Image (tube, rainbow, N blue to C red; front, side):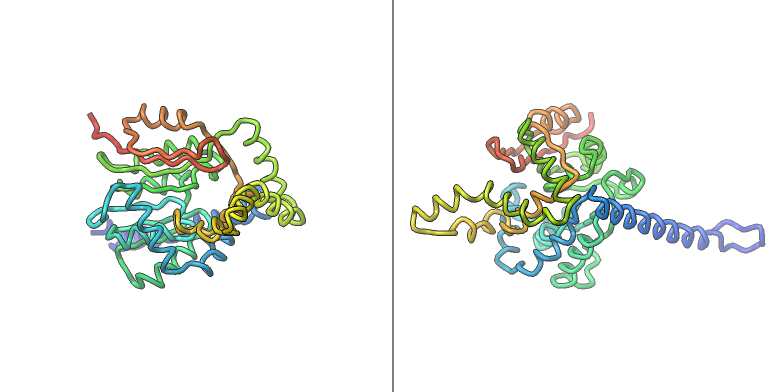
Length: 307
């Protein structure tokens, strides 16, 4: 029952609800404008625009591959009865995969275009579904996260290193996993000097629009020239490029653009990530490294029950 106002009415509760709605909208507006400001000044890559273009090539095969890869990494055939938090949902592909596996899904992203992409996939596959929530939010916003509760699976693939404060993001993510739940993250590998040079190129990409296509071509040459040559010598030109979607359902072109444009940019050695979460009662269940390359190391942790 609402408290009585100075006017003698009992509508203060409703007023508080309306005030909270207004505050949420103002906060959302501020985030959108900050994100737009960062993009305009070359301080942030327009991730959502890249994911919007990716949706044009998303098909059932890619969705099936993503669903299968999620099952394999989590060592589970189904997520029925589980709750799944997708931090930085991007295209929404893995939120969709989790929902298809039966999980109750909560998706959020800092980028409004990424939120729109995730919302579009929900509209296509699960219209009007109350078991899948899509919102805009930041993993660095502790007030926002504090209202979420805890989840059986917390998933954040290739996101936390783009926040501008990766270690703070780690600290914010950790409480969201319930005891016995799983944390599935991927973090850019620290290559030392090579990572510093890539960071410089990423800054150039975002600061200067004229350099974007040359830098994208440079990235493709660095990442794919040996593979193209090997496939050609084996009589299967472009085979690896065409089969790229078979790993996680992703697109080689859009991932290359995401790589060169992906800024802010932070990295970590596998042992640093392992030590951080081990000290916080997380047990490493699955690790896939990128073998010292420029890609991501993938980690699946299980959170121990509080002692």
